[in-house]
Amino acid sequence: MKKIALFAFNGDLMCFVHVLLNAIDMNDKGYQVKIVIEGSATKLIPELARKDNPMYRLYEKAKGLDSI
Image (cartoon, rainbow, N blue to C red; front, top):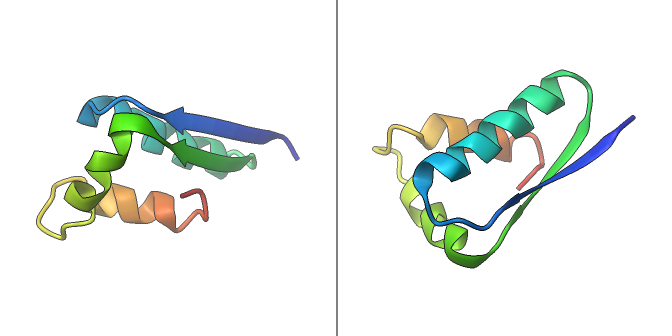
């Protein structure tokens, strides 16, 4: 099994979402994926964890991969 590490360090929401989408896609293709969140990207976690955020379900799906 191929192992992949994706790094989210930019505080831009769309960059972070791109990491989540790639992690989900790679997991679906059979890769073992881990996401490393650092720098200003860590500030996005509380925002994405709010149920009223449009990206909440995507964030939860990525968390379900045991990637975060």
